[in-house]
Amino acid sequence: MGSPDSGYASSNDAVVDPTKSDPQPLPISDGIETTYVRFLASNAEAGSIIGKGGMTISDFQSRTNARIQLSRNFEYFPGTSDRVIMVSGTIDEVLEAVELILTKLFNEFYAEEGDEAEPRSKVRLIVPNSSCGGIIGKGGSMIRSFIEDSQANIKISPQDNNYIGVNDRLVTVIGTLQQLMQAVNLILLKLSEDSYYVQSIGPAFPYAAPYNGPNYGPPGTGGKFQTNRFQNNKDDVGNSVTLGVADEHIGLVVGRGGRNIMEIGQVSGARIKISERGDFISGTSDRKVTITGSQRAIRVAEAMIMHKVSNASAPPQDLNPDHLPVENLSLE
View (cartoon, helix red, strand yellow):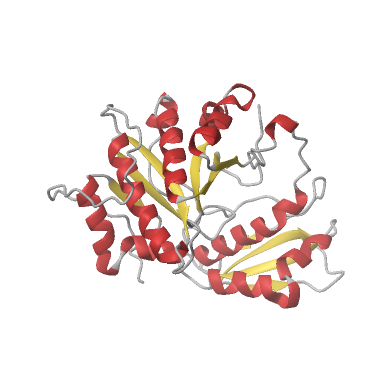
């Protein structure tokens, strides 16, 4: 399905009550202040939410009075190949719109005919790092209560300093549709108590195109990369960026049988060339990874390469046994 280049404004049509399959209503807030939630979706999921000619997203907006916006094609959350969806409105409107969206995704992507088990999926919320403390709670008490109350699995990623200009973390919720909605409800109610979170509402995609970034190798290496722009047109396919990737991590970029590098090229539309063995960036043991294409294609390819390599460079974390249910949780 085609994806428009911009989000849709909220509809002014009369609100129509959606048909709900869940007989158990979720606890809601009587507050009328505007809030928001952002989460990730694949290109296929984004197309399903938009619908043919934007009919589905317009319908969801008119039924809930929430505003639903998506990042443009190839505007991916750093380190992923997923687009950003932002739903804004009152807490009730946001939760109702999220339920419509998740219900549609469950029906189209996760429910298998003849499968007696209730399907499970995940939603990855984007939360400012400064607001994650409220979700975690002292000693992890708040997030553990969310897990117990919703019966969903909730994980918070550590703050990733490899992504320049990104001060957000991913809160991954895994469970059935009812469990996801209960967890999202609890998290959103908590976030809406945070004045910084409420005031930080902005564009659906606030991340700048990274033309300067880290070396994708282990700490202590002196890798560099350079940017060459052949023309000023931002869509010019002659743009080129050379990254420095530690020699021992090149295999992660290439993948078995070249699978990873082919995927990166296909998704981003960029051309990727890796220097021969022994051909390092001067003064380092970093191989040269040259990305050529439009600025957008380079940005996507760079983010995907970052994702492949950053996990190998991250030091292992020591977790207290009490915190084991919250995988990858950094308690501060």
